Structure formats: structure tokens, C-alpha cells
Image 1 (cartoon, rainbow, N blue to C red):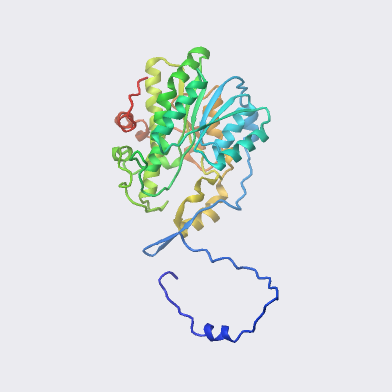
Image 2 (cartoon, rainbow, N blue to C red):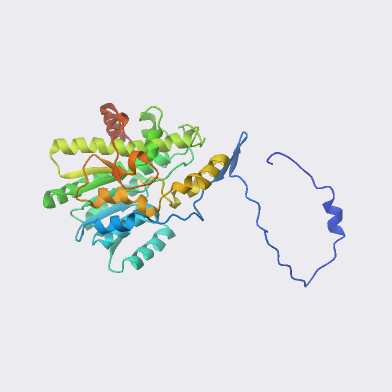
Length: 381
């Protein structure tokens, strides 16, 4: 009813005639403010999506976890561990004997999630290091702290990500989604690569794992250079429709395609060097995490996703299987993306054959060189 005015005609006089009820107790249900759309754009109202109340029990994860190897003595550096797939990955690595370094922004969620991890794995080793992926200086500081504590690491798991954020710039001038999901992870990989190489030379194995998604297939033209430059706030506006596109969707899709293309580029460079570091990517399918709780969708899409598509969602644990295959499975192959088949919503984590735009040599070259320029580094393998 936005924009439709209906002034009260009878209520003012009616209220005057009501008696005084001082001292009387009234129990009333339904007193909350009616839900309002987050915003209105033309004739489309946008509502905030949430997974609250949707139950998705784990179907495959219990047996999958049993088959994962012991990783005692190995160090796992994981971004975004306060909830969802990152939390599951951190807990599982610790349960299997690994030492887990959790990189997150400073918040109460870090304190709360760490307490839950330590409760779930009483003998687990968890180290918290502050890292704000929307601040290159913070990423460098976090990397320096990791390097001060460890001489080698077994796995860098780049799980953290945001989606459908407004068209805004970070303090570094980049799009908030791109800096969080790709650019800062590219910088972090460069800074920690020597520690991964040290592990690979010592034990014959180390891994870099990125968390992509099915949204990598939603770009219209493959990777576009403008999204990786310092153009934050000028990249398509805030339209958000999973069916019809919009700036928020396109920027997110670019970040997720970048995650996959980066792995293929890194795999080629590592193979050319003869390195035993593996570059692997994953996608979680449609996982029931709080990742989408801040996403605003047109009302009809919100209804479709919550009440129709959610029937096919899988649990956060099941959604972490691709990530964990990359992190821990001895048979996981470099240059491969693991997740539900054909970028599906649910199912076992299996290899997903890449599309041409994921392995395009020009795209890989552009991504690497532009990421270097924007982050101010030279990343040589």
C-alpha cells in the first residue's frame, strides 16, 4: 500500500469516548509492527530473505566426514569461520587433528563462534587472527601475524564471502563484494604462498582452496576488467533479481567466477613450476546457512526461494563437503572444482567440468594482472 493514503475518519472521536482503564491489565497478541518491504523500486517491493525456520538435516556429511583422513600436525588457515561452511570446515579440521587459524573481522560473533568451536572440539587447536577483507592493510597485517607464528601451512581455505551488497566502495576504492570475495584473498594467497610451498616441499602436499558458487555461471560476458579495478560505487547500481539480473547480482557473479578462474590460473602456474601445492575450488550448492540473511529480493522471488526452492536446499554440513574435499581429501586434484554435480543445489561433492570462460587464457591473464595492479603487489609463482 506504499503511496496510498487513507486518513482516519472515525477513530479520533471513537477514541475520545473510550473510558479510562487505569490499573487494568490487557494481554494482546499480534502487537508487532507489520512487516514492511526493505525498499520499493517502481512497482517491485523488495523483502529480506531468511532461512529462519527452514530445517535441512545433514544427509551425506556424517559418512563423508568419517572418510576424511587424520591431519594431525597440519595447519589450516581459514577465512570466515563464524558460521556456515567456514564454521563446519574449522570444526572438522580440528576434529581430525589439524591446527586451525581463523581469520575474521573483529566482532562478538568471533567470540561466540570460538566458544562453540572449543565446546564442540575440547582438545582442538584454534587461533584467532583479526582480518578485515575490506581493508588491504588489515589483510597484510593478518598475513604478517600468520608468518610470525608459522613457518609453513598445509592449507589456505578462502571461504569468506559476501553477496548482494550495495554498489559501494571500500576504503581502498574497490567494490565491497569483489574486495571481500576475491581481491583480498588474492593478496592473502600471495603473502602466504611461501608458507604453502615450504609445506609442499617438506611433506609433498599443500593446498589453496577457494569457495566459488553456482553464481559463477550467471555472468553475461565472462570476467570484465572494470569489476577488478578501483571502481567501487560505479558498477551497476543496486538492482537485485535472481531471474532478471541487476547490479548486485552481476557484481556477485563476477566475484564467484573470479574465484574459479583464479584457481585455474594458479594451477597452470604451479604445474609449470613443478610445485606440489594444489589449487582447488569448490561450490556449496544451495546450503542452508545465514549467508543470504541480508539479501533483499523482489517479493515474488523471496516467496519462490523460501517456500519452493528451499525444499531442495542442503544443510551447511552437506554444503561444506566440496570445500573439505579440497582441504583434506588425499585424492583431490589440482585445478578441479568440487561440489554438487552440474553446479546443482544438492548432492555429493564431485568434480564439476569447467566452462570455457573459466579456463579462458585471456581471462586468466587479465584477472591475474589486474588483481596485482589493484592490490599493489607482484605475485610470482
